[in-house]
Length: 130
Image 1 (cartoon, rainbow, N blue to C red):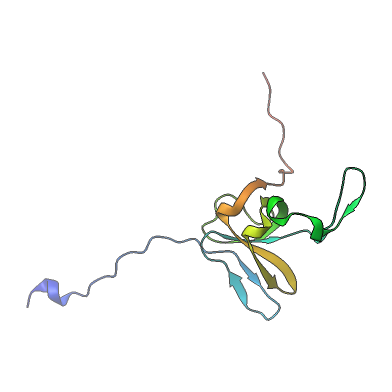
Image 2: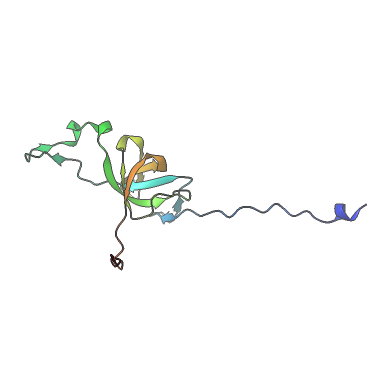
């Protein structure tokens, strides 16, 4: 036997992976999203008002043609454009509805996000203009 055959082989090194942010549920289990998924909380008020002040019920709105803003509550490990706490603009029909802790939320892919509105930094000071 040769020396090479008696030495134990080392497994190949794995690339470092980012862990998804997890959320604890009421039952005590934690939820981690996979890939480029986002969980978004949509506003509860589905009714809108017209420019003249008339109330437009949610059933009268054309669902596939209207984008909605929502707050990001959970982020998967591969999401690059949004983080927890951001507001995102998305097409409601592109997501899947999910219930977590009694709240109705929307599960989206990162590609379904049209725009991101981050909260401005509190300690940010204006730069010097020349």
